[in-house]
Amino acid sequence: MVKNLRAAIALCEKEDDHVSRELLEKMLDDTAEDHAHWLEQRLGLIKLGGLQNYLQSQMAGSPGGSRRRQVDGAPDLGQKRRSNQSPSIAFS
Image (cartoon, rainbow, N blue to C red; front, side, top):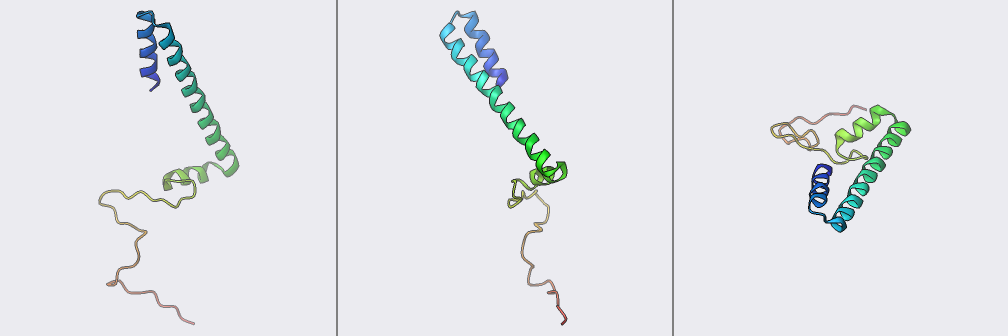
C-alpha cells in the first residue's frame, strides 16, 4: 500500500495536482502511524508475556488461542475421538 501511495504522490506532483497530493500524503502519514502503533502493541505484548507466549498465540491464530488453522492433508487434532477408536479407561 505504501508503495502505491508513493507512486500516486509522484504522479500528482508530475501533473501539478497539489490537492490530491496533499490528501495522499495524509493517507501515507496515517498508514505509517498505524503501522508504528501496531508494532508498539506487539512489542508491549512480548514484554508482558514473553516471546514464547507471544509466538505461541500467533501460531494459534488468535491471542486467546481459540482458533486453529487446519492445514490441507493434516489431521485435525481438535476433533472428537472417532467411534472406532478405543476409549480411555479410568481405574478407581
